[in-house]
Amino acid sequence: MPTKKRAERVLEIDHQPGQNHFLNALSDDIQQRLLPHMELVPMPLGKVLYESGEVMRHVYFPTNSIVSLLYVMENGAQAEIAVVGHDGLIGMSLVLGGESTTSRALVQSAGFAYRLLGQRMKTEFSRHGDLLHLTLRYSQALITQMAQTAVCNRHHSIEQQLCRWLLLSLDRLKDNHLVMTQELIANMLGVRREGVTEAAGRLHTKGVIDYSRGHIVVTDRPKMEALCCECYGVVKAETDRLLPCRYQHKK
Amino acid sequence: MPTKKRAERVLEIDHQPGQNHFLNALSDDIQQRLLPHMELVPMPLGKVLYESGEVMRHVYFPTNSIVSLLYVMENGAQAEIAVVGHDGLIGMSLVLGGESTTSRALVQSAGFAYRLLGQRMKTEFSRHGDLLHLTLRYSQALITQMAQTAVCNRHHSIEQQLCRWLLLSLDRLKDNHLVMTQELIANMLGVRREGVTEAAGRLHTKGVIDYSRGHIVVTDRPKMEALCCECYGVVKAETDRLLPCRYQHKK
DNA sequence: ATTTTAATGTACGCTACCGAACAGAGTAAG
DNA sequence: CTTACTCTGTTCGGTAGCGTACATTAAAAT
Image (cartoon, rainbow over all chains, first blue to last red):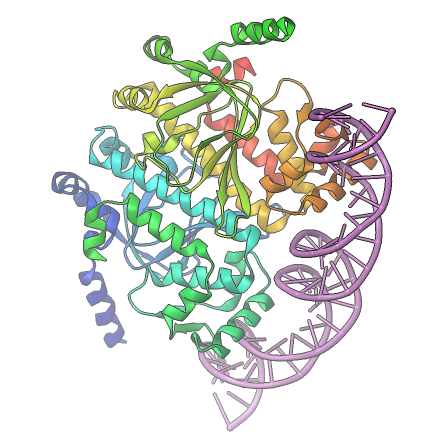
């Protein structure tokens, strides 16, 4: 279909590395050095960027895609550790030095990302400039998110966690429309699909969301934030505090 | 009592910064620069090194003490995020750049630590030498621990989590004897005290631990590791992988 | 249009854990 | 030695979430 093809081309043309807030926050000279080596890649739903223990080749900077970092247990069950979108990058272990992690990186919402060979990232990193400092601050933001995930897993109901998860996703998308099955959400949260169905049903009854077969629309975001546990707000506030102004400009 | 006083003095004399594996792993010249500014401080049970949001003044390097990083919820409930002993340092946010965190650092097992003014740490850090690289790798180890805590909170029983927690503590102590009430453990794990009592009772029945009023002795560590979930082993293996050889020598 | 597949809805018993309340049993303080 | 306090043991009803099974419905495939 030529129509669709053009739409895709337009989408790619519309993409700029600056749409990723992390890249955007870097000083111009760093961007000059890195951008020529950036490669725009599609991020289809379900794509695995890397597996547990696997040495990473690239660092990914999502524009409109969302990636979940999740741990896969020996019995196959999963739990999401953190989520990364246009606010950050995937592949921290390349700069932290471990080269691999114990988690899997999975595309949770389709879109695009710019990617860079790990080696180029490390070269710029070793200049000990802006990239180093921004990476460290982002690293702390990621730590905060993981910590809060642990807390949330311990103390909050599925409904609250669903709200947190939806809000995290919304923040990384342009509109309030998620392409997302309940089964997938359940896998991310590490709960039963039925649990998500029930929670979603209750949220619908309360007039917070509409949904049908793989689509969710958040119709009343303020109400959803009220129904959510504190975990979402804590992470958001701390992330805003940690990441520099240029992040906020684009927001 | 003079006897006790001498015992204390001996204890202090016995202390060396090198007992902290992180410090020990640093190259000699860095140690030369840092050690003169190290201050040995007692770490009494329950001492709060810093509160959520509080700007930290010092970085702490435990020798035989153990510190829990935990999040305190709005309603007062807690959840442990990570635990640090002679394997690491408390105050990562000073080097990562955030200056504070959303968590509290609480001494969970009494002992000693060396501490350093944050400014001195940052000065050495800005030389971009060994300290930078080791800190980054330690940061990844900490991330791994937090991630696994999230997973464990989601999927595993109190008994399994208790095993994990006791093993984490054992690794950071000299003998197999913990000074620790069940109430305290419950607070760390973010569960009811009664839940810990039951789990401990079962572990005792299985011949894995002995305990009474604030003391726990692990009598069969291999069995405890078998009863534990995978979370303990995953973190241990990854930590061993991430941290350099000099860490292992002293182990 | 019909069939097939994928997504969602519902129901049921089960278990782990919670909240609350209270009963021993060590340990420390008077 | 007695009292007070802290720690541990136990009980009981309530509930959130699990595992399983199966029904329904929307979308996609043919």
